[in-house]
Image (cartoon, rainbow, N blue to C red; front, side):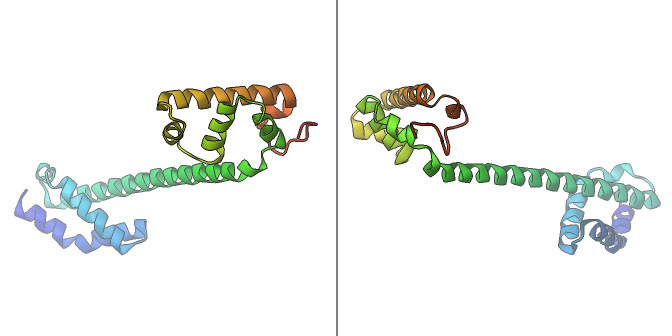
Amino acid sequence: MSEATMQALVEHREAFLAFLERRLGSRALAEDVLQDAFVRSIDKLGAVRERDAIVAWFYRVLRNAVVDHQRRRATASKGLAALAAELETERSGADTRGAVCGCVKTLSGSLKPEYAEALKRVEIDGVAVKDYAEEAGITSNNAGVRVFRARDALRKQVQRTCGACATEGCVDCTCASG
């Protein structure tokens, strides 16, 4: 890169900042994007021969940098929105835990005792499967199978007893068993 090229960019630094600030709305952000653009384009400056062309070329670089920044910000916003929605879903799922119909509580008593205990500890008490395995004196794999089979047995019992409401998650059940 020639001295004249570097001098042209330095002379227009304030104009570049103003250009970026108008598009980004923040002086600090404009400074960051400008520095980033300088760093990314320093190797390519040698290809531009004329002093007047370097300024126009660098404005194109800055326009692209603004577009890249806005895309990254939009992507980050979408990611944050998705995370917020997921957290809200988890929170509302936790809120419905207490609203599950009485059928589930009643029918869980009809399960084999080890299934009922597995569901109580893992689903209600929130104990990790590996911790439940330790408590029960069984392997983690065995505990996982037990919890799976207990859920399946309870699901089948609820479907037999409650019918249609079970397909909707059996929340605020109005069936006769509740």
